[in-house]
Image 1: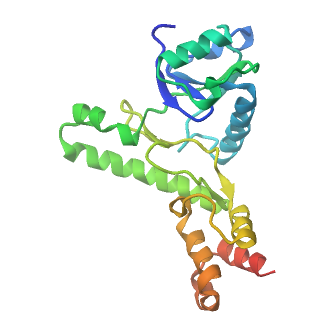
Image 2: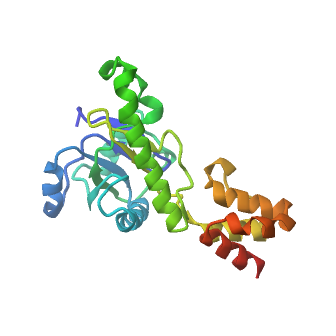
Image 3: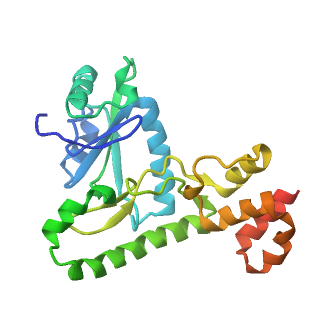
Length: 244
């Protein structure tokens, strides 16, 4: 596995550009799919990933703004060897720093590209002329806006949109949104806010309409009636629930 490279690091997992060979024969065919990468993590964390993958499939069944997930398998390679390999390749999240009896699993998924925060060197080589790049990126930005629109229509917040969670494939120039592990329903954010009077996580991760609502509830309750006509139905329903 000398040619395997770490292309992503999370708090509980590592993403490698070439999957480790699967021990179960039923998953071996997945390893032959082109442009597949693997997220390696202990069983507990992989279970959470599968739950998220199923939710994302329902939200975006055609993978319009997310990457595709294929299957999960147990690597053939010994767990100790995998951990050593990952550490040698600059991937040592907390989960790998302590001894664990849990087997490591890998989630096979499509290659999404490079985080937009790290993509600049690739783009300078492929698109020395900015004029050719701008219309392509504008089209892809619309794809991301569509993603936000779909989530908001379902009263969901990704909750962690930033430059490391938007990938750009340097070959296809396609943007995709990743890491839905923090995704949450508006009602749960409101519940935390109203019961504890604080905003969980950084306010910059909130959808603008919900952020305005929380600000009004806390500081300008008397203004709520004046803005009801201009708010979407979903937000009006949240206000009604909050007032109960």
